[in-house]
Length: 328
Ligand SMILES: Cc1cc2nc3c(=O)[nH]c(=O)nc-3n(C[C@H](O)[C@H](O)[C@H](O)COP(=O)(O)OP(=O)(O)OC[C@H]3O[C@@H](n4cnc5c(N)ncnc54)[C@H](O)[C@@H]3O)c2cc1C
Image (cartoon, rainbow, N blue to C red):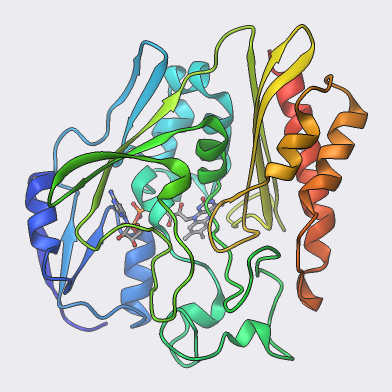
């Protein structure tokens, strides 16, 4: 690990200022950042941490909006009765990610900002498009493709691994971001951007933008239903192979609005408008779920090593919908 200065900000404004020169990396509780420092994938002169900034770990239900601070841990999200009431799928996703020890440290902001788990990105001895090389080794013959994306996977085939992000996308959350011009509200769909050569983060934010929190519309009793489902190699201590989260507004047994998001299938959390269209106007039936699952794979461009993910996409869409139907 390269030596760096450790900068303990005591306010969000202080963190924004400390990040302004572009030479520093922002750290929440450091699970992902420290991995990258140890592997020398990141070699900043300074690390700015949010651990001493007060008030970033709140969980509040304010009218119909669940307000979450960026330093809230996944364990706190999973244990909160407010989260369970406002977004049970969020509690489930947070409680199923990683391991208990990791969930006690992993923060919401860090979960959204975590970098891809692509093995080529994580090991500096390999070339990597995100780290500035001309090629993505996943895409060349013989490349290890198992964890790669099936949508939007050229020129880089990395996949965003957050379990929590698809639930927030499906819920229509907004992200509160503080930058040098003050605080602004960014729709969830706009916080991620396209992969660019030499750009390691998936967040479409400036280096001195700090996520302060996430506001999640609470489920409307008797109207909204939500569910999430993850396929993993094993139940514990693993990232998902595919995640799907859905939220539907249902009136008189008919789906009036639908939001379907997936994780680990594209460089950013992936919204499937085709699956949404297959749901809207339909009843809550197995046939509707099957149609949405089929619609969700339209447009996928799997590599030879990721073709298996299409069945996982279909299964996770069906099961996320089944979870939403069962939860009233
Ligand atoms: C073995 C293992 C298994 C895992 N399994 C899963 C899983 O199943 N599902 C899942 O979702 N995750 C999983 N994770 C990832 C884990 O949840 C994340 O690494 C963790 O949430 C990161 O939180 P952190 O506070 O440590 O972030 P940090 O490591 O401090 O930061 C991560 C990134 O986010 C950025 N960042 C942090 N906070 C902010 C902020 N407020 N504003 C802007 N940017 C910010 C940082 O700059 C950095 O780039 C796993 C991790 C491990 C090690």
